[in-house]
Structures are given as C-alpha cells and as structure tokens.
Amino acid sequence: MGLDALRKKIETKTAKLGVIGLGYVGLPVAALFAEKGFSVVGIDLKQTRIEMINAGKSPIEGEEPGLEELISDVVKSGRLRATTDYDALKDADVVLIDVETPVNDDHVPEYAALRSALKSLSQVLKEGALVVVESTIMPGTMEKIVRPLLEKETGRAAGKGFLLGNCPERVMPGKLLKNLRSMSRIAGGDSEATAETMAMLYRHAVEADVDTTDWITAEIVKTAENTYRDVQIAFANEVALICEALGADVWAVREFVRKSPGRDMLFPGAGVGGHCIPKDPWLLASSVADADVPIRLIPAARAINSGMPAHVFRLIEGKLGNLEGKKVLILGYAYLQDSDDTRNSPSADLEDLLTEAGAAVVVHDPYIAGFDGDVYAMADECDIAVLMTAHGQYKGLDLAKMTKALKNPVMVDGRNLLDGEKASAAGLTLVRLGVGSA
Image (cartoon, rainbow, N blue to C red; front, side, top):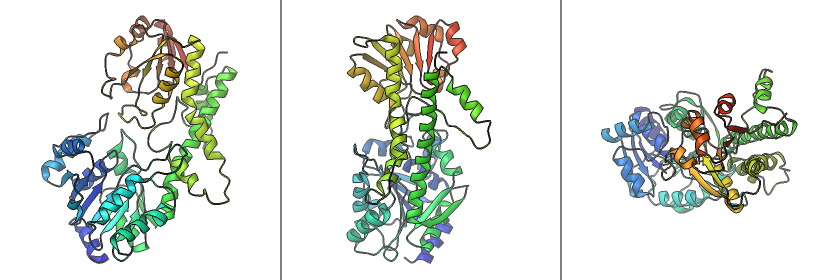
C-alpha cells in the first residue's frame, strides 16, 4: 500500500485502525476514532478488560464523563472490538501503540511492554502500514529502539516497508475524552510526508492544532512539558515548606503571587503521583545520560516532590509524637481526585512510612474496591485522619461526625480541601499543609 492510498483511506475513514494497549490512553483513543467512523480493533493482554469492553462497559473506574456511554455506542455499532489476539491487526492500515513505559528504581526507562508490543506487531504488520507510538518515551527512543526493532523483526525499512511516527498522548484521568478532543497534538514522523499523514488522521478526532515535526522534537516536547509541571510544583512545595517554618499561609501567598502578570504559581500538595510526572522528567534526563550535560534542576525538583509524603508524615508525627501503636486514617489512595488511578500514589508512600513507624493504617477511597466503606465507621477509634486526595466526596465531609468518630479530633489536610472555620466550629483541629503557626 502506497502513501497516497493510505491517505485516501484516512480521508474517507475507510482505514482500519488498531490500538495496542487499552488502558487510560488506548481505550478512549480507540473509542474516539470509532466514534468518528473508523473501524477499530483494540489489543490488550488482560482478558477481563477485553470482556468488559466487548460488553460495552468501561474497565476504568472513577469519574470519566462520557467514556462508558461512548464505549457502549461504538461497540454496539460494530466499529470497536477488543481482543488479545494480534492476528486481528493483519488488516490494520494504522496501528497506535499505547503501552506503559515506566522507569525503574534507578530512574532508567524500562521498555518491556513496548518491546513486546513491537515484536508481536512485527509478525502481522501489513506492508505500508503506519505505526504510531503514543506512549511517552525518552527522547531518542524512536531512533535507537523502535525503528531498529521493527526493521529487524519485519525485515523491512522504515519509510518504505512501513511508516513510523510518534504522537505523544496528552491526557489526564478524569478528563480523558475532553483532553483527547480539545488538546493540541504534535505528530513526529520518519519524514515530513509521514508526519502530515499522521496529522490527517488525528485531525479527524482532535479539535485543536495538530502540528507536524520530527521524532526527536516530538519526544522532547512531551517530556519537557511534564518536566516543566514537575519543576513548578516543586517550587510551590518549597514555598509551602518555607511558609510553614515562618508561620505564614502558602495559600494566601499563592493568590497574591498570581496577581502579578505571568506568575501562575501552581498548587503545593501532599505528593505528586500518576504515570507521567514522576516518570517523564527522568525520561528527559536519561536521554543525555551519556552526554556531557549537567542535569541539576530535574533531580532537585523530583527530590522535593517525592519527599512530600514524608513531610506529611512529619506533620502527623508532630501531632501524635511516637506513632507506635497509633491508628491513622488515610483519606484517598488514588493519586488524582475523583479517579481510581493509584499509579505512584503518594498515599502508598505515606502508608509505608506509617507502617514502618509502627502505626496501624486504615485507608478510605470511594473509587477503589476494598477501600470504599463508610468513612465515619472507618474513622472510629483512629488517632488522626490525613486527607491525601481531593476527592469531591471529601469536600462534603460532615466534620462534626468526623470529630466524634476520631479518638483525637485532628486532621491533616494535604490538599487544602477543607474549610478551616467550619473545622474549628466542629471542634476539629485542622493542620493545613503549607500553613505555619504564627
């Protein structure tokens, strides 16, 4: 299949699409392209996930506006089906890859899922098909890993036997469909023609700009974007620590800072989780591990943000003293509000610290099975509660009931969610992250 034929298929929506990895990115991507009229087959290794999708249900919990309804519609229409069998991709004209690309404990990228997906795809890849990596990857990965692996396994050259590009995803749990539709994308291709072909495809589903560029630029843009956020959050967290030490209120400071043009200070908080921000800065830094480039800011920001659960631990310790035998209620285990995503959860780090100190830990989270009980019953006889995730349900907590349930009426608010005056009126001592004693 030639480039002109592929473009014609994309233009007329007769191109058959494959999506490898049906998680937080791949599933909404597959559903969205199916909604636009493409025939889409999704590949995933988890049979239970496949069964749920083919039944028109979403395996993603939490608040995801419109996602389950969309999955139900496109499955019923026959435009989306899911399977574990890569043979289903034999007729695919375009294959999007959306698998996890984590880093290990040494902050080095681990590409087991990506390599596996590429090898399996190579066995069935159609001549002239377009392969697009949407997963966030270390700059240089397309050139050093993806292209060589596909060329070796298929026996064909990129740009001739198949087309190759990367178009990094830009989504956040809770806003998956909204982000896919409204946020701009950058299409990096093995050639300008490939990049423009990718852009033709994405413009069917993306209402914002779809820009074209080369592989390395697209890779750097995505990792730099999330690294920027990590650095800015670290600044906010460091200011919060300074405010605590000086008896000031970081939330008041933040509002005054933001009144100055161009000073959009981000939110401090109890920790940064998820699959992107804790990982992507290391992907960017790792890209120059063998070059003479001093990397100082990225590790410093990571140290500040990854250290926030330990700071919350110290706030708890400051109220309870020795934690041996104490009972602590953690409110929220997902890393993001109104989501079930627990990847790199700051609450998990806090739980480990508390357990190591000899405390018993009770976890509540309305979106995670096993943690979704009655929050007031779970608070009963706990020595302290700590709010780690800004779930909407917690904003409506009955603080008087919480005060009555807790052995010591003390709560640490790591997300600035609760009203201090209401807490005081209910007899609850509220310890707010970033707020010191005058």
